[in-house]
Image (cartoon, rainbow, N blue to C red; front, side, top):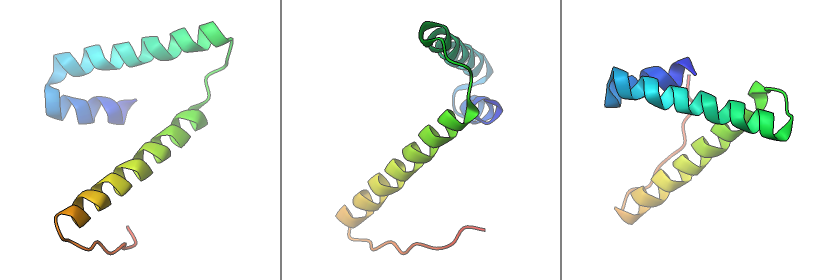
Amino acid sequence: MSKYYWKLKQRRGSKKAIIALARKILTIVYHLLKNSDVYNEEKFELAKQKQESFRISRITAEAKKLGFDLVASKAS
C-alpha cells in the first residue's frame, strides 16, 4: 500500500493520493467482510503480476505498431 501511495502522490498530489488509498482500503475491507474472507497479501501480489504482464504485452504491441522490435533483457 505504501508503494501505491507514493506512486500516486507523485502523479496526483498528496490529498488525492490519501483519498485514493483510503478508498482502496475501504474496498478491500468491504470485500473481506462481504465474502467472510481473511486478508491475504498473496492474492494482491498475483493480481499485480497479472497486471504487469498485461502492461508489458500492451507496450510490446504498441511498439510493434510504431515499427520497433523489443528485446527482453534480464532486470537486475
